[in-house]
Length: 156
Image 1 (cartoon, rainbow, N blue to C red):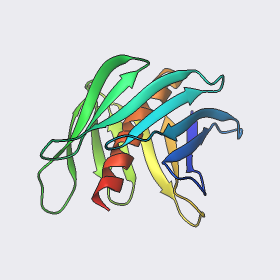
Image 2: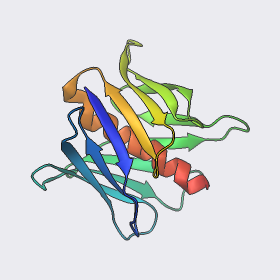
Image 3: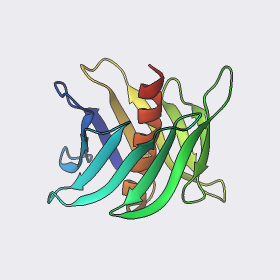
């Protein structure tokens, strides 16, 4: 299942539309006014299905992930000089690849690919393709990608 992750062109807060291969909106992501990043994920019916919330007052950026109201994991930046590194406590997953250029794989505990993320060039806004191997992992994958994107925005 491919998801197209596209930032909205004119928005005060982080807002994204997530489309399937047929161009149908699957999820909508809306940034909320708060201390740090707070991204709410909604399904096609407008139901809140997840949240990515930045924790402030930490040494390095940390983002907590919630499915509906339930805490399911977090991603935190690790100290490194050249290449971004993360501690991921979420589904037993880890990430390999080039974070800086948005070309990486999400792997499960057995080192099998869960999803592949890549940036599309030559668009008006940031546009990424998330190729998810199993549709049931789509929301979890999206929330991890959002957390990495929010951390990247925190650096800039």
